[in-house]
Length: 127
Image (tube, rainbow, N blue to C red; front, side):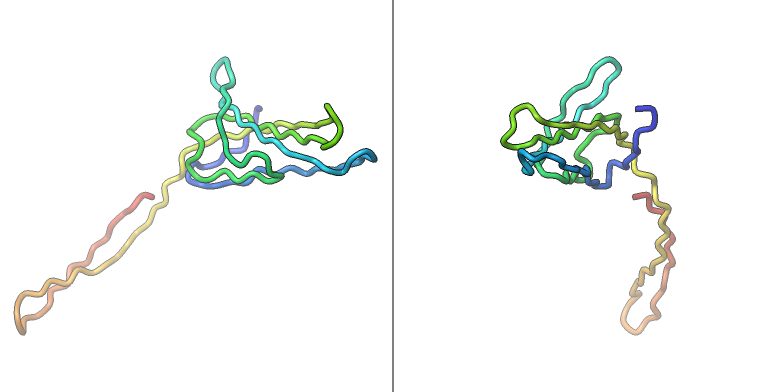
């Protein structure tokens, strides 16, 4: 938990795991992803959809800013109480500002058969 992966809130990300099966009794698995918000003294479960696939897509702006524990559990189907799990930590951070400069023209018509005045604009946008 000392170095969680930082993910900007505006970006989607995929949680995935690598599973190596060495079991003669079954080669079928099921998956479960759990997400917990880490507070000062507690962990609060966060409801997530689509959390039973081997890879789990988290859309942008799904999680609030803060620290999260992600737990992946793999169950062997057909064998009771045989599973493995692993945990990772992520930190949702604010999206860095992009310094975008847009140069454009505004054309103003002064009247019939008059010259067109062009005003140059320079705008700084922060997305």
